[in-house]
Length: 164
Image 1 (cartoon, rainbow, N blue to C red):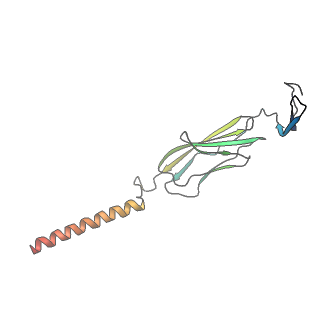
Image 2 (cartoon, rainbow, N blue to C red; image 1 turned 120 degrees about the vertical axis):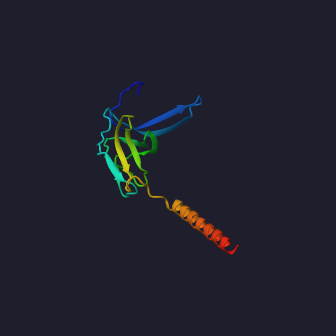
Image 3 (cartoon, one colour; image 1 turned 90 degrees about the horizontal axis):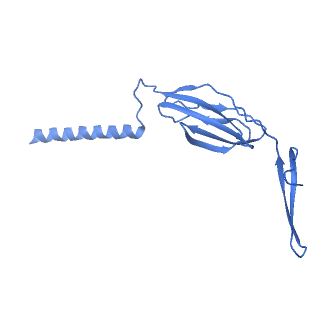
């Protein structure tokens, strides 16, 4: 095969043979898939989502499509949170555990030719307590302990004043 020869799509077995000056030969072969992929992946655009703080079980589900899928990346506000191989199936991102705020999640699906498609879903997490965020359990225990300690100190001071 001459350099620059154009091959049709399909799987080809490529064999390389190397000869030395004594006529000895070594060879190896590899199977190569030749594709003619000039179409970028397509991707749907799920609606933006608004959730209450601490809600569970919500997901963004993207359904990108391509004949030759390769990889995908998901970013949250510009920072990569997932980067993985993509086999052409749906990409599902769980939204549990987000704090109150606004998040832009962008998925980018890339095919074997390096062509890509992207979509952004904005997720808004709203406070479900009229602006007062529920305290995490550890903080609640700490505050309760501090209050109990303060009460003990006040009781001891009052008893000492009565006896003294």
